[in-house]
Length: 419
Image (cartoon, rainbow, N blue to C red; front, side, top):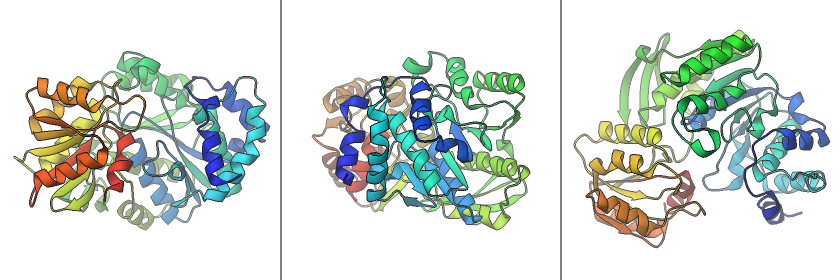
């Protein structure tokens, strides 16, 4: 099987759709000899910040000398980004070989796995073959019924910042969503929660009590911000002084505090993570499309924010970096998102919009999005492609201006390809 044939098989219509539940993943993994039972994990759920938190943790553990698997979704530019070992994406031929290995088992299942379930099982086999010491495992959606939740008790269960998203699948209220994400909490486990959500926090506290799990939360009041510019930011947190991260979003300091609390949990469980590994790992973290600066003059930023909680964080970072400035936005959204709330957060900051349709069947048409924006009193021009929107934004801003592409992770890869 070639790489192209492997991707065609993985994306085949046979596996399309989303079916909650763990039975299919468990059946497929059992056919593979249960590779997940021979691995150790950090399991990360939440609404926003999962990827950045995962990237920082994996970078720190790598600097501490461990062989680290990283499983994330969606990918930005290339499918192989979804599974990495010590910073290296799965090689094309390895992906093809593993897909060929897993194919007869998946084809034989009476209840076919979904695409995400297939990829999750494939990743588990990959990480085992690569002899990973630990795998940083990001939940796809929710927690309790997400296919990643077939694992036993992880070294740490991390719950990133909470917001309203995937309400159709997880429930209409924050408490419903919290209960779904609390599903990754295992009996006797160690939990680190971002906290600060009045509806979600009591759910996590209750589930931890029921399951005899320890719970710790960062104290964001202990964060002392330092330098903040287009190259990143520095901050102190409790005993950690003058840490540097190359992630620009203001919210990343809070994610970093979650990471530091998780490091402490891992140390208590016997993982050897020296202070220098933490410092270097933070400073050398790379995570594309999260308030990523792609160009300097005019400044062009791409951010994968795609729900009100994420967009609010992006807006705050823009205001902090460029006080009093108006921006040109390149925007595309999924039609099933809370579009009105998203637009309400960025229209007050906008000089104008160029709307695009991300390459996803759920995406809103550029013309419809432009009409929604103009109804709110802002200028909006629909574009035939992401590349056209980017080019027009750069031209409109000119020397000294600032443009920002946001609204969907699904268009971030196309935006990055323009640079």
